[in-house]
Length: 140
Image (cartoon, rainbow, N blue to C red; front, side, top):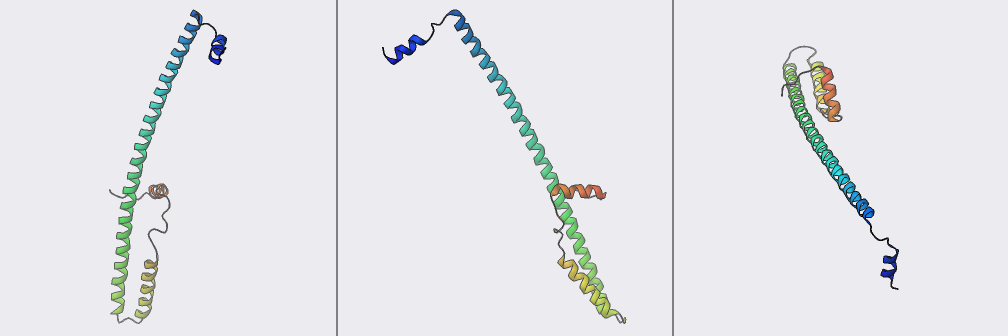
């Protein structure tokens, strides 16, 4: 007896009940496959919706930060202009304390130049939250 004949001899002869059971197993497997496909499709749609919302959030945060940085640099420019205008006035002043005023203004200019508008930046989410808590308004 060969190996294939011995294996065939061990297999039961298919009867009507076995055919029905096998058919039911195929149907159950097909139904499970359909359910898994539907679930995975739903998961993909949820992921795509989440991705879209995250991209929108990132764009809003980016726009907010760019606007805030523009305002910050506008404010720094104005501060420097004001300090230099005051320095010019102090340099041509005939007042007795003009030297001390010049010294104070030069110190203020130096301190402002040494600070960075980026030093306090944390995560964009924290910056937006802190801004919202401050009650300030930035027009976009």
